[in-house]
Amino acid sequence: MAKEGRPLKFKTVNDIKEKIDKYFKDCGEINRPLTITGLALALDTNRETLLRYENKNDEFYDTIKKAKLMCENFAEEKLFGNNVAGVIFNLKNNYRWVDENKVEVQGNVSNIKIDPKKLEAFNKLIDG
Image (cartoon, rainbow, N blue to C red):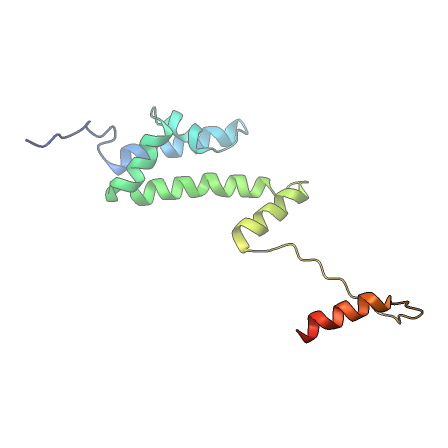
């Protein structure tokens, strides 16, 4: 006989959606950050269980995915406060921006003294 595992904590999508909505409303009222761990606590579960619901239960997938997206959006918006480093972090990690340094040199070179022995050794390397 196959082992069935623990029964689902939430019987329907509406059961979990009501608690998710309450978490977001409560956070908004007291100006509290939205987090995945905070969401899990509000659902009286843990982060791993919440992620398992998303990954293993098609019925709950969209609801949990949207809740996680709201938490992610909150965090991303916080990066855009007075934190230039946060904006740079976001651009690099989400939009594939990279730091790039270019140096252009212009001008003339004159009065170069070349050691004849070093020049001869260099020419031998080039000629093979």
